[in-house]
Image (tube, rainbow, N blue to C red; front, side, top):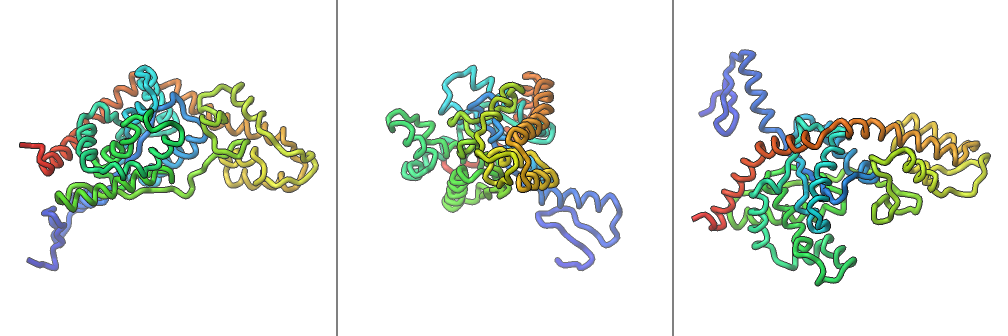
Length: 362
């Protein structure tokens, strides 16, 4: 039935009559807000007990910026410790790393009262979904995954764990189980989201509409820190600065950055200087413009540039380290348990639906 004086929201939502009152308007805006709310899902992998500056600018900063730019989005962040087990076979290290990494994200600005931060190892539905996905994925699909190829480049095939081989399967289960709309990833992780999308589409075709097909989010503004050897900052290259390093360790790293043989008086190209390329990550546009001008004009010594870089690093890391020291392990464990209670019903409902469709439920 049509009535031009009535606006009816689909799916049997309340209708708006022509003579609206304030409470009805507020109610409908809330309904519309829920309809338009998007779910963004990401993860943190606790293979280390700390985060270095490369990961900070490559992963943490873009994630927090995305959350700020999308204040109405639901932010799901899971602790990928079941993935960490493929590389780290030390129960104490995995436990401590897991707590420390969440503490560091909180110290960097992650809102523990807004973000759904949870541990999938505490939610059986993840492992249950992983079994279904494993049975419906052929080996060829996993053999072409970058994660497996990288493992093959480092080790022999007979030393690689099945967990490493199936890494993208568990990741797809972690993503699809919560009907995520968007998954922010780096370019090296995009393939995992593409596999999750392919699996969701295939499952939906064969068993009926079940999974939301997520979109990968790749932020073009993401910075990759290039260190003094022109390689990205990485633990593998031993060219990193941890967020929790003390002043002495950071200053030592900064002093080790090689520079050209140009004299103080000579004009210098800032883009060819590793000190500048690191420094600009910490600068405002105005500060960056001023520093570039000093490079191009001449009269700036590399020692002065390094001292300025050290100063800027400490301006960023000191408040993070202070906040980190204020967060207890017990607080993190409590937060993880709290959000587990919120997300578990979502995962359990999805597994129940999948089990019925594949024939597991009798």
